[in-house]
Length: 77
Image 1 (cartoon, rainbow, N blue to C red):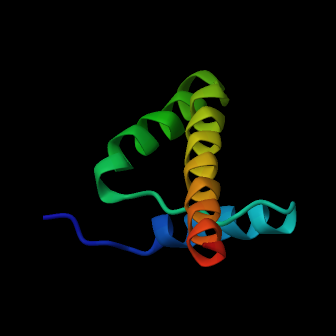
Image 2: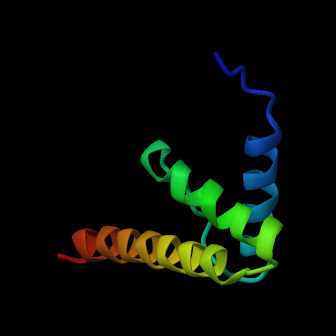
């Protein structure tokens, strides 16, 4: 059994702080996407390849923005 130590939550909180400080929306990484998230982090840790992580964050950002647009559209009509 793995006990959560809070490091992951803290790092995602810091990531969202950085996103918001640059004008982006905060994102959430769903449990079903955690393996891909860890693989993207490992790609950087092992190979210094930031692209998988950047691609994942960009897709999640786009998904979040689509949610916001859908909420705005619902209130307009």
